[in-house]
Amino acid sequence: MTRPSPFLEPGLRTSANSLAIVGLSRDNYQPITLEQSSGAVDGYAEGATLNTRFGSFPHSTLINVPWGSQVRASLVDTGSRGRKRRREDVESESTPMPSQDETDDKPGQQGLAKAVTASSGFIYLLRPSPELWTSGLPHRTQVVYTPDYSYVLQRIRARPGTRIIEAGAGSGSFTHASARAVYNGYPRGDTDKKGKVFSFEYHQPRFEKMQEEIKNHGLDGIVHITHRDVYQEGFLIDGKSPQATAIFLDLPAPWEALHHLSRRKIHKGGKPDDSDDAWESPLDPKQSVHICTFSPCIEQVTRTALELRTLGWTDIDMVEIAHKRISVLRERVGINYTSERGINATPADVTEAVKKLKSDLKRTHEFHKGHKPDNVSESSDTKMDTDDGVSKPEKTGADDSEAPSEPPFMQGRIIHRTENDIKTHTSYLMFAVLPPEWDDEAEAAALAKWPCGQEKKTIGNLDKQARKQEKREMLASKKSKKQKVDDTPAPAST
Ligand code: SAM
Image (cartoon, rainbow, N blue to C red; front, side, top):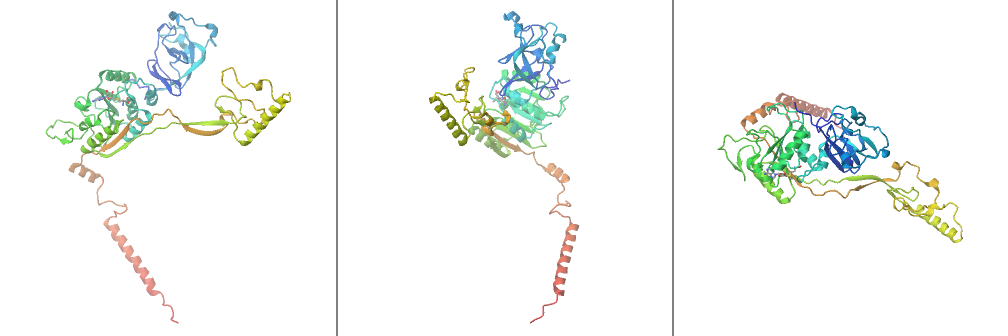
């Protein structure tokens, strides 16, 4: 029985020995495998513990928690590490998370110290998805990012049941996304034709790491990874065809691998070779095959295009994804906003500016007269808030009743900006299609399915009887029009 993958069937809650993604901040995601400890681990009396800049999180507080939960940090007992847990800092002896409350009663966790909630710090526990995995995965190579792979997968028509060839596997970013795209249940036995990803990698340590990751993520039923140099040895699996209809090549020289991805034996450069009867194509013989090659340089693109054309691929085109992330926010400008972060405390318009100038002028006059203006208090002269060293705007003395009445999230006007941390060029994406081979048998099958010349009720293809009837009706209508004209009395001559 194949273990369900947390990427495909995550259930409602986190579970032990399974992957979870820890959301630290908007752009910071950390994958962890949750460990069920039965005693102290690495000197932590609470068992295996995740340490982040937002605090420490014993895994016992992260197991059996609904996906998407916010989990508070714990005060960990570092025991042998020498630091003492400060009970006086403990905000509460119980924690809001059920798993924490139940820790002592859980089988296998009796030897663990109970996790105690800290006064600050939290993380989010997120269910694994290819997008989050791509954001946090351990990089062993350059990887394909979400904007590229989401476009690639729809162009190569990856859908539940599709069989994809992928090379090289690299860090597995594309592999995870394609596994989810083709998943339509776990294959059973060798003959099962469920959706699959046939992934190839020739770098031994990367291949081994990928194999381990795919197994740990419960994707070993969907992803079949092979250690191979595909330029030399092609794409068959144990001598058999994977019957692929979609191909993704992220290789330094994709044109070196293309001659293996044909319907007949062809030598590199396009020379056909019919002498080898045992030669098998890795492609599905009955369907069109869609390919994408992913190359950072235009020279790679031109060489690939040349080879694709030579080998009979059609619809060759190239795309570059220019991904932009747009940040939408409310801009609050005006001196009547109370001072806080994110506020541009300058006058919002001329009226507000004039009002402020008048008020400043009045204060200057009062000062020179030796008076303090009635509506300015001692503290409001202070320009610097010393608490955090952040310069806060000077109070204007303007009437408080003019302060905005909307709640803060509705204040200001909505603006959007493109964020400047966006990578621009990643790679050029080349697409092409290889139609199935067409022979007399295929022609006969197509004719049987769509009989030509015998169509009925199709515009432009009326059958003989219908055409005759139409002609008769046309003649009859012409005749009756002529009769009408003949029967009309001629106007009397003057
Ligand atoms: N697409 C991957 C991802 O999203 O994580 C990254 C692929 S990485 C850029 C390219 C990989 O191709 C490398 O891991 C490299 O070892 C592998 N590779 C290069 N030449 C190869 C070959 N002839 N056969 C198999 N793999 C190859």
